[in-house]
Structures are given as structure tokens and as C-alpha cells.
Length: 553
Image: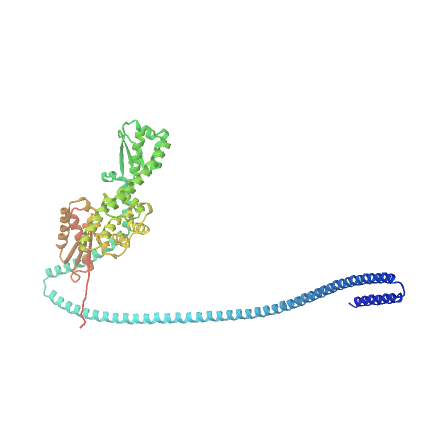
């Protein structure tokens, strides 16, 4: 700015000098004066213009310099700010590190304190456990002391009773001596023999009981072996009729085609169906053997189709058996659905139709299981209706009570438990599940309908022997068993149960000892074997019980 002012002042001084020169030429002519004046004015304007340009350039240079200075100052300020921030950050980091170290030390101290507390707690828990253990031991010892005291009191009581019995025996003995003293020699001998005989019978009964108990332990194993041997050696007609199916052949020549070259056709057939194909010298028939009625039916249908078709080779066998299995599954499912509709059930899970239909191909003691379940369903429903209970629930329980038999031979286990799991899986009501389990006493009855299902199952002749005889002969046999039992002395009551497969006897406990009751049971069993004709076996159970009742007033 100072340089600009100096330049302007110089120009002003120059202008003043030129103006003075003009005054000096006043004596010239006016024209010259005007020209000179004009030149002076132009010179002045030129000088003024130059001065302005010079001033503007100076101002621009000054502004540029000022901007540069300002930029430098700004850069210096930013640099100072950055340096201050770095210094502050270093201080903050340093302080943070110090705080973290302090916090770490405090945490370590807290952890040490926690460990110390946990150690003390563990020690306290151990002490408490030892104290509780000691208390339990003291309680046990106290209980033992009480038991010992009770045993001592009981022993004292028994000693007193034995002393009283001994006194009574002494008195009886003295009376007996007096009675014997008045006897003759023969009378005394007979009395002695009678007592010896009674004691020998009691000793023999004890010995027989011990022998039977030992024999019973070994009997099960021996019985299983004998049963297996009998099954292998014996094939009665009733067993054969339920394990084989016969297919008629139009010509005996077809046997060779069924067997195939080197037996490949018969092997393929047996592998696909899971049955045994028996081709023997019997003319114009082929026998299918299997314990599974469903497999046997599939094999029979498949063989009949193969014979009708005439093409018998492994590929065709596989195709026909596969098709028959599909058709049989649909047939079984339809049979189950029709059974449910017949009994009035439309809300049964569709998957259960198949298992219900399979019961048609299952027998139990020669009775078709599906027909048996339908009969149980109708009986249980009628009894429920008479008693004012849920008829539909009782009928449903009767239908489902043997559902486990459709798969129990595949998965193993009791058919009632298997059936309960199956019914539960497909959403059957709890009353149905309880009926399934209760009819074989796998759980207590929680619904009266479950009891009715079990009763209907018994009415449908679910016990061995009851299916193959007339009702009157069955009743006569039960009455005869009870009459034989009641004819024995000291028998108070007798009950023939389990369709005549068991008889329970209640005897007078005061008149018979355990050994005498055992002998009585043997005599009754021998007489029943001798006088009654029955299938299977009859279990004789004798109950000897003493009851003492006193009324507190």
C-alpha cells in the first residue's frame, strides 16, 4: 500500500510541473496554447491512466501476496492443530493404557476374591454335606435303635407266648401221660403209630414241596426243549390246515415249468413271496407253506396267475408278485375301511385301515382275528348301551383291542402294547388306548368302557378250549370241577375261573397247616385228573389265610 501511495504522489507532482510549464507559455498564441493545453490534457490522461493501471497491478500483486501469506498462515495453523491433536491423542492413549492396566489389576483382584469365595463355599458345602451325612447316620442309627427295641419287645412277647404255650403243653402232656397210663399195650401202640404216621406225612409233605420247587426251576428249560421237539416231530391236521394253501394245476406237466431250469423259477418265486413252495408226487397240486397267511395268499394268487398266463420265468414272476402285492395292499386297506364303516366309524385315520384289514389274515386259537374284533366291538357296544355308557367308545375299543396283532409278529413284543403305541400314533382317543392295554392287564382300567371291552373279549371265547366245545358241556365241566373240590373236608369255598383252566380253593386256616394244605392241593389235582376230561391243563391254587379283627370302642 505504501508503494501505491508513493507512485500516485509522484504522478501528482509530475502533473503539477506540467501545468506550471503551460503557464510559462502564456505568451504564445492561443492556438498553440490550446494545442499545448490539449497535449497537456492528453498527457495528463495518459499519465493518469498509467497511474491507475500501475495502481491496479500493485493492488493485485498485494492481494496475491496477501492470499499467499494467508494460505501460509492457514497451513501453519492446520499444522499446529494436527500437532496438538497428535499430542492429545498420545496423551489419551497413554491415559487409556494406564486405566486399562488399573482395570486389569482390579479384575485380577476380583477374580482372586471370587476364587477365594468359591473355595470357601466349597469348603462350607463339604462341611454341610458331612453334617447332613452325620445327621442321616444318626437318624439311621436312631431308627435301628427303635427297630431293635421293637424286636426286643417282640421277642419278649414271643417268649411270654412260648412260656404260656409251654405251660399249656406241660399240662396237656401230664393229662396225656395220665391217659396213656390207663391204656392197654395195644391201645398205646396204636396211638404211637398214629402219631408217627402223622409226623411222617408232614415230613413227607415238606420234602415233596422242596423237591417240586427244585424241579420247577429246571422244568421250564426242559419244557421248552420238549415243546420244540414235539413241534418238529408232530404235524397234526389242525396245524397243517392253518399253515398251508393248495393250488390246483390243470396238468401235472406244469410242475417242471414251475421248478424251471436248475430250479431257478422256484427259487425266484420263494424269494419274491417269502413262502416255501412244496412240489411233491401228489398229482395236479402244488402246496404253499407259510405261517404268515397274508404272504400265503399273495403267493397263491401270484401262482394262479402265472399258471393261467403260461409264462413262467424269473422276470415274469417278479412282475406278477409285485402287482399282486399292490392289489393285495389295496384289498386289505379297502377291507379295513369297510369294517370301520360297518361299525359306524368315519373318523378313523386312513393309515389304520390297512392294519385293521390285515387282521383278516391273522388267526388266534383257530379264530379269525378280524371277525373276533367285530364280535367284541358289537358285544361291548351293546353292554355299554344297556349300562348307559358311551356305546361308540366301547365299540371302537372293541374294534381296536387286537390291532397290535397285525404287526406284533413283525416288531415283537406284546400285541396289546404294540397296538396301544399304534393307536396313539394315529390319534385314537385315550379310552381306546386304555381298553387295548387293559384287556391284557398291562395297565389298570381308567374307563368303564375298557372293562366292557375285556369282558366282551372273554365272551368272544378268547380262551383256549372255550372255542371248541358247546356252552352246556363247558358249564357242566366247571360245575363238576367245583363239586369235586367242595367234596373235600376243610374246603370252605372254591371258584373255577379262566374258562376252567384254574380253580381257586379257600380252606380253613385254623384246621389245616401249610403242609396239610399242600397235601390237600395235590389230592384235589389228582382227583380232577382222574375224573374230568379237559384240554390243556388245570391249575389248582389253595389259599390258606388267617385274619384277626378287633374293634376299638
